[in-house]
Image (cartoon, rainbow, N blue to C red; front, side):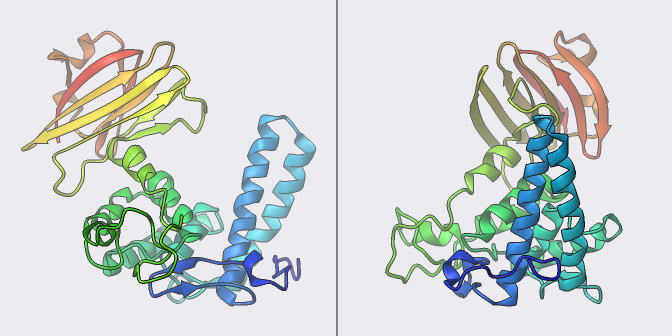
Length: 314
């Protein structure tokens, strides 16, 4: 550490990478400012994880230690890398904005402005501006933290470079190291992991952050773009979780399966709670379903174990 920030601790750049193999063969490493920023965000993320682990294990001295370190680190990163003129971090791009938001480096009062800048990058570029290091940052933010998880849809429908669709139309059956595919390494892991967005966002199956372990979980499907249906399943310790939705016109049908000895919070994509039925019955007459609230464009229900069929108006 130097002046409160993590510095390049190894003479070989391979141990101090920033984002790697991003579009345009962007390579961040070593003493570059981009690697400097990226690694301090990694450090902030790791400290946050250590704090969570220490709380679960009731290690209060460790909670205090890592909380102090994180409390000192975040304002230093903010001071060193934030440009208040255009609300960007380290020159700005999708991954850098997402990393600051994901780790809580962004002060609460600035989050709307930084989120708006991130959304503008996504809308203007319409592709994933990420490499192998940036991918888990960008996808985790979009799938779990962003108010706009739908922003991933347009990049995923592209077939021109750089995109997953470009790999498919080229007939690739392994992941190349770079988006342009004209590279020696034809079997790499740079761009794996995209399936999380399909499961967590489109189908909506995700763990409950307040109660890990899937005895209670969330189903919050994302109805977006020109998709007419989505379906996915996840094996939990209690059995198979399923989610499938289909839309016709302004009507939506959502089928869910909640395994034995577990419960779920189900988000039905409609703000018209009175339009929701379950297996043809008014929602208040459905055993195992308890209305909770309306949240944005969703009607939220607590659902017991079993199989259910929700109908609603989008």
